[in-house]
Length: 429
View (cartoon, rainbow, N blue to C red):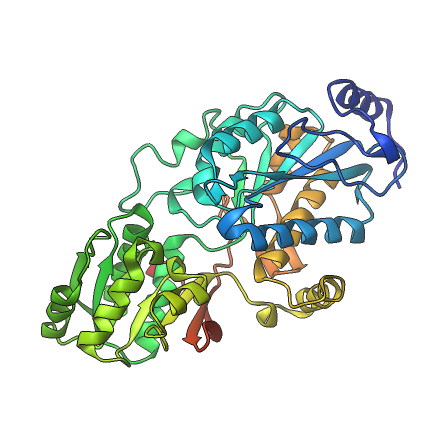
C-alpha cells in the first residue's frame, strides 16, 4: 500500500478529531445517530474514511434493503477495507420508520445532515427510494468540503437527473444548489423503463394499445415514456387516460378499452393505488388472458398476484436493471460468493448495491481523499468489467447502459424472466 504523505495523514487526524472517534475493537464512530449502526471495519485501528448507506431497513422494502446492506459489507471485506491508499469503513443507516413501513422524510433529512456534518463520511450509497433522494441530494450537495457523492442502486425518478415532459421546471436544478452534480444512479430511469416496455409490446406483435395511468407523477412519467416510444415504433396509442385510485369499480373504463379494439393495455402506476382492482375489472370485461403490461409499480410480484386473486396471471411487469442470471462472468462469480454466505439466491439489488460500493472505492482511490475530488472522480467512472457489466455515467449522473428486465407473472405469484431489453436513446430523447 502506498505510504501516506503528511497532508493525507493530517487530514485523517482532522477527520477523527471532528467526530470519527475510535470505539471498541477499532471501529470508527461515523454518524452519531440512532438511525445508524456502528461502523463496520475489519482493519487495524480506525479507518480513515467512512462510506454510509441510506436504505429503508423497516417495512415494505425492509427485506431487500437489509440484504443490500449485507451485500455492501460482504463486498467491502472482499476489497480488504481499502480504496487505494485509504482505509475505509462502512456504516448502515436506516431512513424508514416502523410506523410508516417505508422511508420517512424526517429521517431522510436527519440522515443527510448527519452525513454532511460528519467529515469522515466521504460518500453515500443510496438512496433506495427516489422521494428520499429528493430530500438528501441538495443537503449533501452543499456539505462542507463537498459536495458529497451519492451512488444509488435503485432510484428511477427521471427528475433527479434530467428533464422530460411532465417533469417540474425546477428539476433537476433544484437538487444541485452549488451547480455541481453529486448524484449518480446505476439503474435505468423511468423514461427508459417506459420505452423498454413499449419495445416489448411491439416485439409481441401489438400494434394498437391503450394506456392508463394512476394520476401520480411516477405513473404519468412511465406512461408518457411508453406513449412516446410506441409512436416512434409505429404503434397506435388508441387511448391515454387515468384511473381514479379511489374508485370502487373500473368496468366502465374496461368497456371503453374494449370499444377501442386494442390488442393490449399498458398500466403506468402503482399497484397500491388500487391497481389490483383495475386489473381484476379489466380482465373481467376483456377476458382473463387479455394482454396487460405494467411497470415496476406492480412489484412485488407476489403482492399483485395475491391482491388480484390470481387474475393478474400472465401480466408482463418490468423492472429496471439486470437479473442475477443476466450478469456477466464477473457478476455471476460475485453472486455465487454472496449466495454462499447468504444461504439463498440474492435479490438483484444486492449486486447493484455492491457495485455502488465498488464505484465509490475506485473513486476514492483516484482522489486525494477529499469529498469534492472524490465526487468529481465518481462522475468520471468508466467500468469495463464490473459486477453489473461495463458502464459509465453521463454528465447528468445517469448510467449509460439502461437495461430493463421484463417479467411474466405466474402462479403462485412469481416473476419469471421473459427478456431483457435495452432501449436505444432515440426512443427516449
